Length: 98
Image (spheres, rainbow, N blue to C red):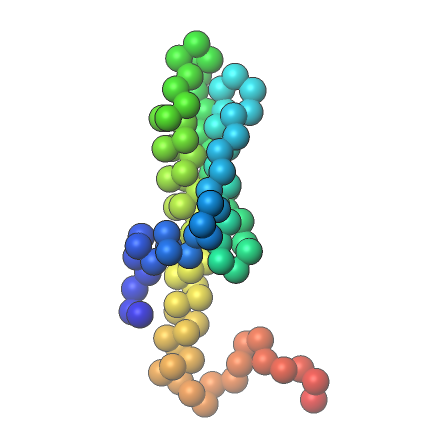
């Protein structure tokens, strides 16, 4: 893998790992659980509670949570590629028992 894609990110989500909660009259909260057990969250809110649209709130909250996945997965891929291209470089999280 040379790049992170939306398809890859969504493949990292566990089955039934996306949940939505309406909080109060204006806020929609999305929680995405990944295969590693890490959780990403996103929110959306409307100004006027009488115009609250659950489908729109869920769409925006999901996108906000998914957007938060790019940076850590990009860092992970950067580390993998670095280690592949530099096999003699020391491990960042190596065994410290010595």
